[in-house]
Length: 107
Image (cartoon, rainbow, N blue to C red):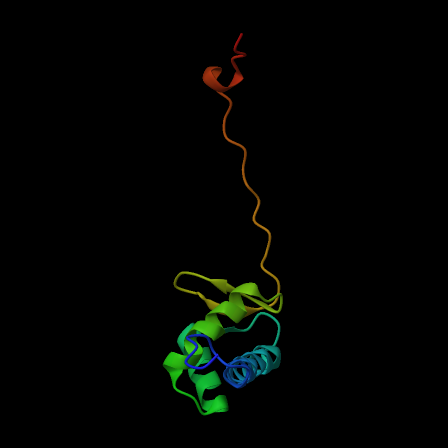
């Protein structure tokens, strides 16, 4: 198909190689952190950009996707937030107080 609007196989292979390079660099940086260490997301993106010799704008979305979907680390928000190496701690949900409204059985 001449003039096809779809990517050719060589273009697809090139994109997959680029993404693979970014994810491999992110994985090695996260694995090098010790358990419980935290790193700001911007710092991690900059380190991956340096390791891959790419622009930070090109690697940012792939780094975000990796740390949000991997079981090596988790993302924590807030003042002490960032990428934390390890498993996300389980938070207990406290039961609310029982009131007449919640204990009333409807007929």
